[in-house]
Amino acid sequence: MTLQKIRSKDEILDDSSFAFPRIILPEAKSVFSSRAARLRQLAEDNPLRDYLLLIAVIAEAQAEVVTRYALPEVSEERIESSQKYGMPALQPATIERDPVWLKILADILQYLVQADSVPEVAVTVAQAMLKQIDDEPAALEAIADRVLADEDADPAMAPVIMAALQVYWTQLAIDLGEDNLPVVQKESGVCPCCGSLPVSSVVQIGANQGIRYLSCSLCSTLWHMVRVVCSTCLSTKDISYYHLEGQSEAIKAEACPSCHSYRKIFYQEKDLNVDPIADDLATLQLDILMADEGLERSSGNPFLWQAAEVGEEE
Image (cartoon, rainbow, N blue to C red; front, side):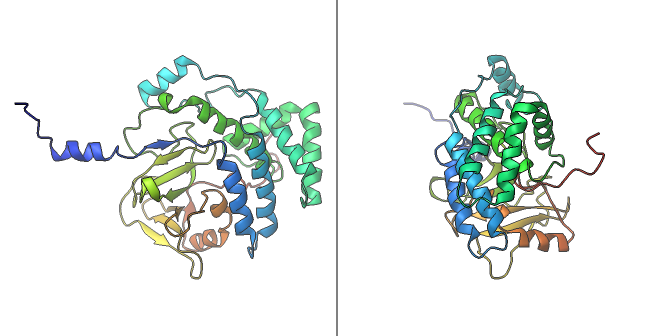
């Protein structure tokens, strides 16, 4: 006769919390192509139609170039340290950025120059940046540093540079692989792969029905965060949800009175095609509402940038 240990309630709850993946790595074939299609869908009758269509072309370029170039492997020492201390292995501040990212940038810029229906001003910027890659790569490296540090940058150049960096870090996350991910032992408001902030969160359906994932603004990784918890300060007190009348029920802003911030949350149950970056970008009216309520965004959208003030880069 075999004796079976009767597990405690805490042990059962602990096991059940791992019945779904805590971290979901991006899929190279779909992450950018799906976003491009969603941006084109959202552009219809949207006040930001022209800009959404431009970002859709950029997303299409990202889909073309992702995995095109081989990236340097992450060292075993870095992976071991990441797993030992539960820290992101791909933090931009601690990992050397290979110059191959400039090749990715060049390919995206060439796609923009050759694509149909791209505004002339965007083509002009792209052509100037292509020349800069050859003549002044250090200047682009400096802008990339500002973008990764979430500092103000040239609003015309920053979105394309961010697009190239997204491709670079998304491929790094894919190459890292599930076996080398750190063990997530507690809720965190930063990406477990690269340490970047999430742009928004998505409540999924299907195999992960009802599970909320934060979406990394840089490497496209998804990681679990329990619902009705502030993804900035982790408070559970008086979390509230805002929604614009007449807009899709799939789009809400999750607000926290403790840190006076909000982050958008999207529900696949209401709209299967929601995208954490595209839908955030297409719902700036909700951001205006939240500002009127005296709340600040927890983090920005990677395709919206403010210009650096004169003298700031000196």
